[in-house]
Image 1 (cartoon, rainbow, N blue to C red):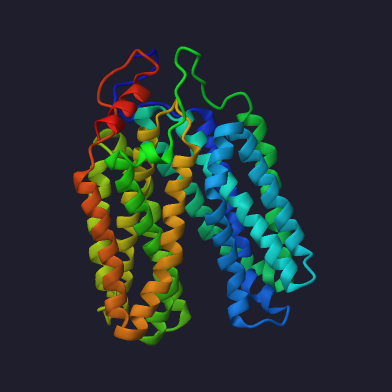
Image 2 (cartoon, one colour):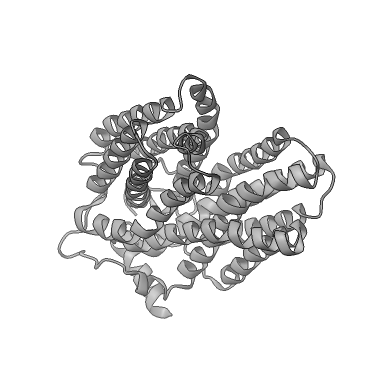
Length: 420
């Protein structure tokens, strides 16, 4: 084992400075995205379009992220993480700045679509950098920190965005452009030349394809959990919780905001702890516990009629989601290995969450319309149960043996894939 490393499973490994750069950049990007979120539907409506057309602007962004993710993964493999990371921030900044000056609804659609491309380039390359720069035995912590940075930015952003709307509907987009420019100016110089060691010719590892990764049961389990997370956290939580609070609990939009806030609080409080547990005890235990907690809490939301109990369950559901995220990402990193190129594998992992976020609200909304909210939340909990079945069979991927050979991690990953 190299000098300065600690035993696998230890949480005493110091994270490289570059991890903190990525975390801060994620926070800046997320807070900017949160700033424009409250303004976007109203800005679209200012062009005299209906509610469906206004909603289409949001769906188009997600659609472009989903469609361009495989291309982004291939670009990362061909040109390297830093170039694509910078390109994603530049594209996002230019498209957001252009959005502020959009003169028609169709211009707004085009600019937001381009922004979705920039977003997926940034996300895939940033996660790839996170994997390459994180010590194998500290990937859970690194993933938890990165997710926390994004989440805190997503919480703080709408608070600032609401005030900017009072000035102008275009002001949030200008502020987001500045935020992206700051993230670009700070992070790229600090990351240049420090994006992780590349293997020598003797150590050269072929890029890990999605087809080969799918042979690994843990990658398949991560895809299932990512899909469930997208369905529950990014889809149903945002789409159904406010409607349930208003129409069933007979409370105001303020209570709906409370429910979303306490979910985020539970999520934030758990992310870093889950990352430490994943590095100390393994990736699998916190994911399994998190999926069980998420399934039970989410499934019970639709049968609760007491607002305070509903808030408590929302908090528990947030804790369950927080337990899943960092270990799940760390497990995907273990499958790829720090010296292999796995841009398309990461893109597939991201796409699973995006597909869940798109299908979840539609499917749950239809169930709620036909059978009621209880069944809709129950189906959402069932999705987490299905993901849990994948994880029950998945092997642990946390490195358990000390290594002196720098390629041993990748070789171990190759053997695990081949064993299937």
